[in-house]
Image (spheres, rainbow, N blue to C red):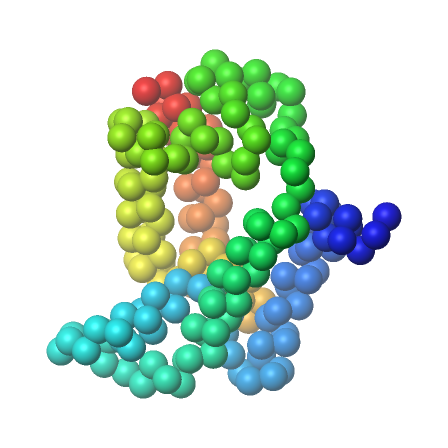
Length: 189
């Protein structure tokens, strides 16, 4: 198996997890930097919107490394999607495939189901809730929790921060409630 074939396959948790976990000590050792993605939106707004808003009045240039990090994630995702993607359909458990078929979700050819995440589905109630309302709730929750899942669950827990533990527990409870109680109702719309 070539290196390119290995990169195209899903990596097991015992490889991917430690690689993600190593970002924390690397960022701390190299430059005493915190890992997190959601703060980059604030930095972009502070750089691009010269308004008289106190929330955006800070030295965003000190955090410009974060913008390069996010830019690297964007280009890395682009490269992975266009040059390193596995051409085979996403493999999901047969039981899940049968359950999703009851909701009309049968296309598993992309990374996400086209019946849920496409321009056509955006014009349906189900698609609007999944894309627009879901996106708003993620943004609101990130701001309300003072950071995103990567910032709290990876960086905050590694630094033994109590607020990050509380936020991560709430993220997990919210995910379970969404997946088990709310999502089936939305999918049946």
